[in-house]
Length: 150
Image (cartoon, rainbow, N blue to C red; front, side, top):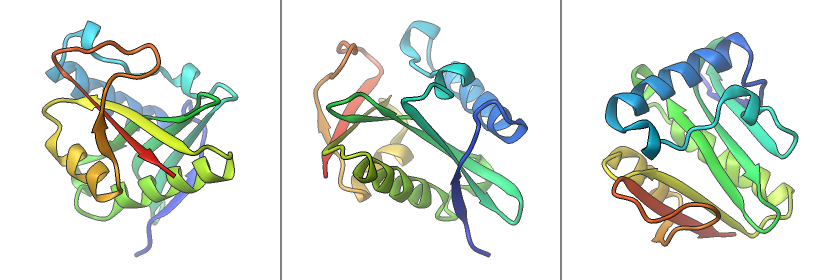
């Protein structure tokens, strides 16, 4: 059964279900001031490409690429716990990289939680390396910053 990844509306039923699960997970681990998740309306802005990974009509995960003009920022990367280890994260990462290249971006960056080790491994497998804060981020107790040059 093949995983497909397509542009989607973060305000769709599938998008909202994935984002609500993602936000609930983050809020269970980090105080609100240490969570940088975007809401569905922010993820629907014109400079953001939001994707949903699907297998046989079941939404497995989501991710977004926010075009910051000089780099693309990965936002809202989430794979449903039942789909972890299925290749969903890899499919989303490849789609984000393809989209960044299509948009002419030469750098991708992200912020993730310091104890989200599975996410760290996924990003490292896709060529991301730890870097310092970027954009409006500041060094924080729960943040890990990563980047990849394309």
